[in-house]
Length: 356
Image 1 (cartoon, rainbow, N blue to C red):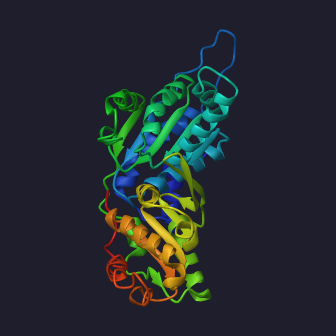
Image 2 (cartoon, rainbow, N blue to C red):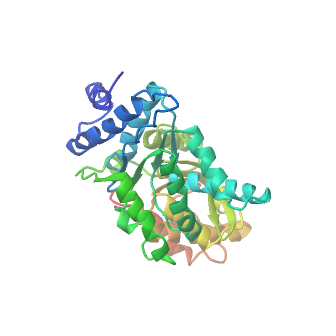
Image 3 (cartoon, rainbow, N blue to C red):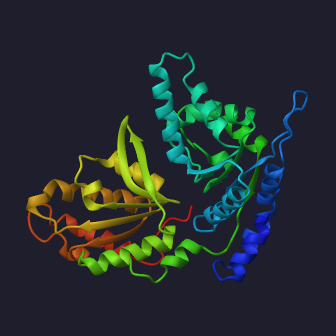
């Protein structure tokens, strides 16, 4: 059975990964969990289930390799047929809320209990990517949910860009959330991944991020960028904003992908775009059309979207009918669009993007 350090070394040797001292230093923590989960569970009337190992809370800056390490860890569990699920934290919480809604329809007194029980039955390890909590509905549920999971012996491994004490920072009724932070510190080893290298930025450094016109060549270039950033993976992500659902067609490891009309052809507003900017650190936006009188409402939404991305320092990779300065040249709003064009040009800089 291949250990995680062995798998990491083999990938480095093959040239698939760059050796990184900070990444290598955390491998024993992952391996500790893998080895414990790989131990056979002895059954019997008088046998007590073994105490599950402590999980892992791996946090640090964007692009340091947290998600890659998580993928390797999950791969070693799958090799050993250990029931594990890897899921983006935001998507997982949306599933929990949907499950609770369905449970309430059946008249159960505690809607969370049956949902948590089903999750615990299906896995021995939950691997969450990008734990972040900004929504009060998540904050009020997550504590009890994890209490159920821990009691059931589920091991939690998660990545985050924030130290546990900064989760749900400045959130409404945050004092009710604090016990969850203490549970994280108790049940998970908290480890900061301090690597001087931003691998995600490396993948984009000096690379073209704005493609025009939006033709077959641009589509091929966008596809290459998506493959480079996500390995070609991606699943739909549903954001719940003010009790409405906003669908992002593809999302993986903080990289979102959508077409212009997915985000600007629908009646979305600032709150929707702010939620997207919170969830994603890179947005791949395809097929921005020529803007003007004929699509004035879509153009206004696009301006609002760019403002939200700009303020949140989200990296934008886009294909468009024309260069930013020539996208909106006539009609009401063309003058005001000059600021948006300037922002789009600034966002093409190799150093653009947030570092949290």
